[in-house]
Image (cartoon, rainbow, N blue to C red; front, side):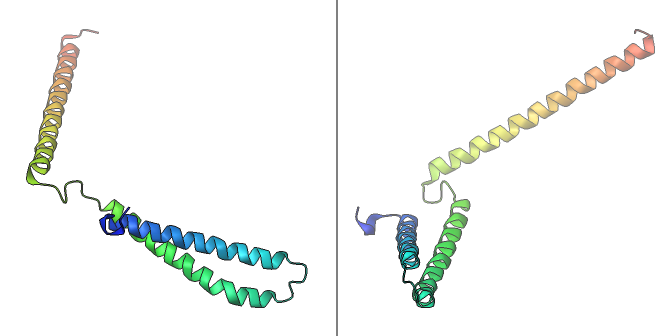
Length: 126
């Protein structure tokens, strides 16, 4: 796929993927060095690999945090034309209206039952 036509989020996540692969390569190299029977230069191994590994981990963490934040701010009709967006808003208003009507009906039913119970108690019906 042409990198120019890709979504910027996809491009950033592909870069994170490459950084994760590089971090795994570094970790593997350290494990190989530590696994050698004559690994007397352990401090050289740490000095050589750890700074790059830690920098990669920080870059990965920052990029993923930013992408998660962007995903949470997603607006479905941000780059869409007017008709689908306004249709969605109208549908939401209709749902809100129907919910209000249902709440009113529920309140009316509760008032009716309360009135019926109080009239039964006045008459003395058990």
